[in-house]
Image (cartoon, rainbow, N blue to C red; front, side, top):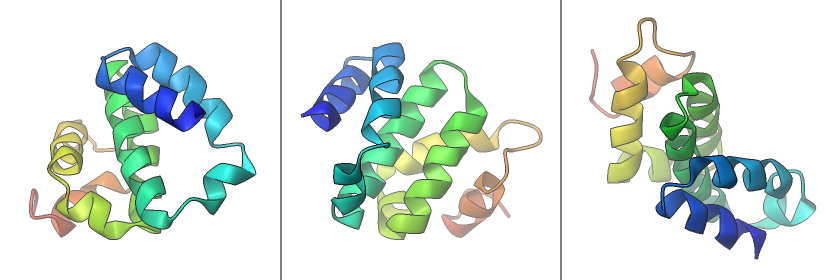
Length: 108
């Protein structure tokens, strides 16, 4: 249920609430038992919430984490590509994001 609350807050652009709840969600064993595709998609949404509050490092960590558990969610999902592009614009791009940008064809 908390996972749904995080996603709901993120979708209504309440990033502060989404990120506060996220910190509780990821500590639970139930989160680690979710199918990898669900965890990956969730982490992409969390990366977007981090971007909304201006936390590029948090967004980068969430994206790299999503890529490690479900690469297809990061490399094929349009929202993930948008988030990668936004983070990659930072100079220098946070660790791992430059690699992801290259993998999805957003950078050379």
